[in-house]
Length: 566
Image (cartoon, rainbow, N blue to C red; front, top):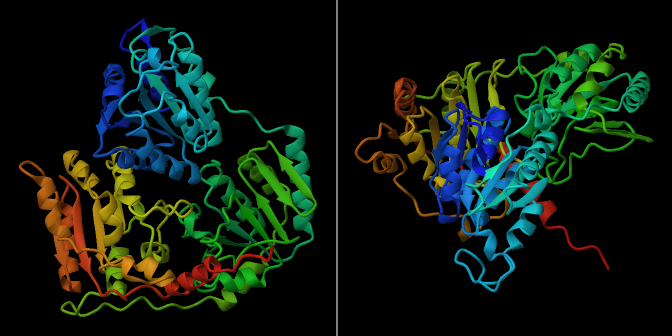
């Protein structure tokens, strides 16, 4: 590291973050982490990126991990970490290896009768570590420079292998102490290979399973990226020749211009033809799925039974069999070499394929409607576009967009935290803005939770395009269960960008109420390279997708089930 031969705990950590491919880490300063931040700054191969608060810091790191494969966030003890825990819980649910690094109290204060600030006012400071264990795959408390290297390596290695967050707590008086130099990066990057005997047995069983089926269909799940098996899924699909559907949270994990792609399977709110072909099939191979109440539309579209195979990140399950400790990518590659063509579902899909007309352009002076908004958004989606769809109707409108090969789609359907997208977009843009056009689809209610990170986009001159749908409330909640709590105070969202700009920012805030105004705003956004463009799109409160209405009704029904009799 720049010729340095002596390492401190902080510079050791920095080198390990560099070893796993990080060129940035996100931070919010607090007195317990200041020495640690100084030590991290000594590594000139990484940049320290600052966030407005700890929740946004965690979500920014989560977004960075979506592009980069891993990320790190640095906050202070308790008042910072407990706020960041929300985002780390999201990273756990979404299978993203985010390293949460926390500056902790002086090691001499542990086990004493000292009362410290930023704590619960008790003498036991271990509560935070115990909390962290519930939302990470590895959690360590570093109070000794001697033990620091092994603890840091353990946490980072486990996060990479499990594709889950890890937690590293470092006492403020230890961060600058000398420690051993790091060994080869391979010690934290190497993975445990599939057990060969188990792999062979799983492939043989799966091949026999498929040999008895005539009409299989593939379902792509949202953990496919975490499994590192996107290319291998294409191999199996092409070997089988069957129809391929994707779950909503896995949109873009299988190419939408592939001839076997038939759309999103989401029960009653599936793409036209997708539910029909799944219902017509005689078997389903589910690759790395997450089946929850949202993805199954209130448990009404749950694939189960003897004709369903679940191929997860590390285990394969089908009727009568369960195989563990094998990588999904290895399984798919081997299975693709063993199966025979089963094109029946593609033949049937071509018979029933819907001939959908493109949405017709609205009059330029007509009041803006959701259909016209997304018609215009569709026109700017290229192979180098990444779309972030916030929790809410943006899910359904975003899923309906057609993605050219190479375009990416990001959502947070397991955690479902409104406000997730703005800081996550910021983190993603830090990693990918030079190579991608980044579009954020968000609602007004969601935006109010985490709006501050637009200021950080301005600070770093990130040309993100934010389509903010102003329909005066929490529309997704309205469709699940309406009440006065779904109404929000309206903001001047476009005007807020000027406040964030202050004296030196180049962000652009635009308010549109017609299709013509939207068209002009998009033209301005596409040439604004010096900061984000927020386009406030004013539409009626009840102008939502039919899919949200149907989905919301079924989710509400699932939520409202009476308790089983005792």
